[in-house]
Length: 144
Image (cartoon, rainbow, N blue to C red; front, side, top):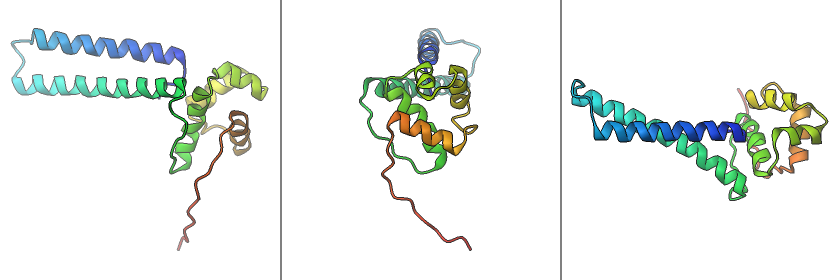
């Protein structure tokens, strides 16, 4: 998941490298490489490029405001949503830190671990500052 503009630029550069590698491999394939291995290499390059493009598109959708809601099915997904909400809200890590009265490095640490290192109280505070509302019903199950 791309968490900031720096990571976006790096991911975009990586995607461009993969695009060039795919074009080069298509134009001048290595004669010593068996066809099955060549196909596997191309499939791997294309798969990696698709993953990078998906991450770039998600970040673009969040930054542009095209993505307003996120479906979550677990606490881990909620933690990732805190980062998505910051991006969608147009806030940098530094700006969120200022709103919370924290140092930017603390937000960077939280986001590096997708908020696994944050307390529940801190996560609630981040949700409040970002204006995130949870509307999905919670399913209760009996554990035997």
